[in-house]
Structure formats: structure tokens, C-alpha cells
Image 1 (cartoon, helix red, strand yellow):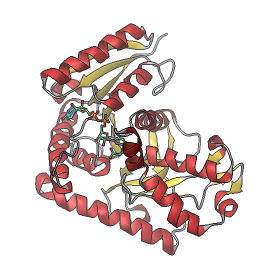
Image 2 (cartoon, rainbow, N blue to C red):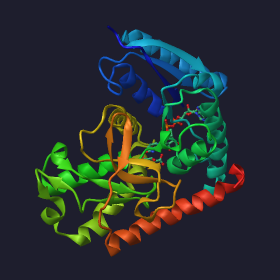
Image 3 (cartoon, rainbow, N blue to C red):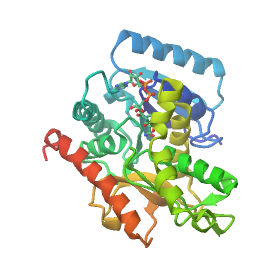
Length: 330
Ligand SMILES: NC(=O)c1ccc[n+]([C@@H]2O[C@H](COP(=O)([O-])OP(=O)(O)OC[C@H]3O[C@@H](n4cnc5c(N)ncnc54)[C@H](O)[C@@H]3O)[C@@H](O)[C@H]2O)c1
Ligand SMILES: O=C(O)C[C@H](O)C(=O)O
């Protein structure tokens, strides 16, 4: 018997990530090749954006995806998130000319407060939320705080693009295949301060750290390359990464829902106090997933270099949180 369709809400659906993401969701790449989906698409209440969204929906129709059981267009999160099983919060306010980081944080805080409240009011109680829109960790924190009736663990932020970028850099350096690398970790914020950590990684069972054996490369090439990859893509393409971001969102939700079979991945999740990260901070951690739940990998040794890097990215997140605290009544 065919499965009951899952409702997938996507915000910023007419944007460039949306254009790469929706077709893959409808093709079953995210929730499985036997799982029908209903897409509930949110765009801003603006004629041009809504018209563009209609155009994307026409194209989705024209693909005749067997798993696409329905789709609706929305300008109100209260209808877009109704009964949503998965919510991909992609739409965000981009940084405009002359806008300070603080202004960007505040503009997005408002969006994610409204969307958190709407999720709280109308989404499935088991909704799995992935925040992609930047600043992703802090936006996820705001949405989580605005949804007190939903479990905090349902709110996550996307670090998977950083994780995938780290895998590719390590594969290139060691001359190995990406698919053979396990136990990569990216700690912290989705920003240049994130700490991609291959100390525990293995390739075909061998230690990646031993294979590379070059701390100078780690500190001065690998970390800046992964940390500044988003900016390098904007510089090269004239637009921010879209297909790779959509791919990472698919990877994140697929692994969360369908499980990693004991393998590690990276998710931005509200801290439970692990590794000294204050509770509630949405932080990139190594996780395993099973039966739709993630668990933070415990017991990893944090050496002095790693602690310094973790502190740096944590300080940034603390500052971001302090910058929006007044909007959350904290
Ligand atoms: N976490 C990551 O790894 C990662 C990677 C790449 C991009 N991003 C971020 O993802 C976001 C989207 O990127 P994009 O390239 O698709 O941008 P885009 O500008 O092409 O599209 C964003 C869309 O969101 C819509 N939008 C804005 N506010 C909205 C709201 N309140 N409700 C619904 N829709 C809204 C806009 O109308 C626009 O169509 C950006 O914030 C970008 O920085 C994150
Ligand atoms: O949109 C950006 O600023 C970059 C993006 O977050 C990325 O990592 O590619």
C-alpha cells in the first residue's frame, strides 16, 4: 500500500536554493523513493515573488513526479506550515548595501520569530525543522525560542555544506574517495569561524590525520579554505552557492529521517551541554541518527588547538545571541 504523503514546507521557495531543492524533494531524494510528498511553498507577500513561485510550480507540474502528491503556494507562514512534517526555512533577508551585521541579525530575527511562532501554532508536533537561511544557527535558535510548545530538539541548522566541503578537501589532499571518508566533524557556527576537524576521520579504516600529518596545512590551508568557501563561490559565480546548499539540505534531512547506520555526520543542533557548549546554543556537533532522532557523539578528546577553535566559534554565537536577546524577551 502506498505511504501517506508527508507535508514538506519550504520557505524562500522561489529563490535560487529553492530552485535546486524542490525538484529533488519531489523526486524522492530527501524522504525516500517510496514516500509521496506534498509541498507547501512560502514566499514573501509580493507580486513578483508570488509570480515567480507560480512559475516554479508550473515547472514542478511539468516534471510529472510520481511522488508529488500535491503542492500549494503561500504568503502566510500560518497556512504554509499547517501540519508540516518537515520545514525547510531557506528564505531569509540578504545583506543589503550599507547593512551592518547587527541589522542583518535583527531583520532575520523578526522573520524567524514569526516563523517559529507559526510552526508552534500549526505544524505537526513532530516537525523536523532545518534552518538554511543565514545566519543559520542564530535563526534556528530564534525559531526554537519562539516555539515553546515544540520540542527544542526539532530545530536544527545547516552545517552539512561545511561538512561536505571538508570531506572534498580531505579527499583531494589524500587522493582518496569522498565516500570512503568517515567521522568528519564540523563544530560551531555556519560562518568562517566554524571548526572542521578531521582528527577522528578515517579513510578505509586509516587515520586521516596520520595520512595528512601536516598541522601547518590544517591551520593555514584547510580551515581557511572550508571556512571561506561560501565567499569564494560568491566571488567566482557572482551569486552564493545554491545547488550545493540544496544538496546539503537534502543530505541533512535524509540522514535525520532515514538514519546514518552508525556513521557520523554534522548537524547544527541545540546543545545539551555536551563539550561545554551552553545548553540551547545551536552548534555544529558530530551526530549519529536512528529512528528519526539524532544523538551527539560523546567522549571525543578536545586538544588545546581544537578548544581554541571551538571557543572562537562559540564566542561568535554568544555575540549573535546577545545581539537578538532583546527581541526574544531575554
Ligand atoms: N546554511 C548554509 O550552508 C547556506 C548555504 C548557502 C546559502 N545560505 C543562505 O540561504 C538563504 C537563501 O539563499 P538563496 O540563494 O536561495 O537566496 P535568494 O535570495 O535567491 O532566495 C531567497 C528567497 O527567500 C524569499 N524570502 C525572504 N524572506 C522570506 C520570508 N520571510 N518568508 C518566505 N520567503 C522569504 C525571497 O523572496 C527569495 O525568493 C540565504 O540566507 C543564504 O545566505 C545558507
Ligand atoms: O550566503 C552566504 O553568505 C554563503 C553561504 O552561507 C555558503 O556557505 O555558501
